[in-house]
Image (cartoon, rainbow, N blue to C red):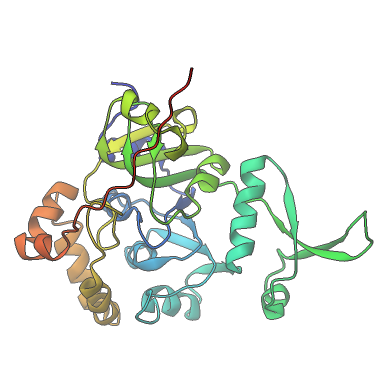
Length: 300
């Protein structure tokens, strides 16, 4: 069976109160199913890091799972604010660190490379450097000019959703590539959730798509539709209607609690969640096939 376990078991075994958690994925492949399982297991005191928190972190904060958020850009993409995270920060209930996108990815790159920090050019947003003491400067030993530095980010656990993986966790990703590879290599433990579990032959047939190698993966879980309401390229579309609905839900504590009761605590797992969404939503999110051209990896 390799590293293949249920999502419930993976969260129970790999995510602990007080951990720093990185849920990877940019625009698509956001691991909402794992976020919901963390809420169901009532994990608390988490430091949740992510380049763009998205609704997944609004929901984790609403459920009382987090004590701190580390991020670059915070918002409901294409809609507006993350009302819960923002209100909790403003109320002094949630610790926070803000970075530019490039700074956040640079932190992960340093962590993945085993370095204590990395230099970078100024952010273009000097107020961030003034507000966040984690930004430092050092003198470039080659030119004597000052460069900005940020410290490595080494999460305790990264969660990465992928299109397909084998039972050892070797995973293919295509479409928009975010920070999945950097987050996985920077973290102490890695959970992969996959739309499909396939044979090693399928993975080996296209090695350039293997962004996550199995040797850094601790648990792999078969979780179709794990990214909803975001999307998985080639499998289902983004649920834009839900992003709009969340803007309204997240303004009222009672509405948020009702959502969590019905859609997180009220379903056993992602399969039950997807079934509850119903055939109308399933049909709306269907995508047509559009295959890439075959690549010849032949040799002599």
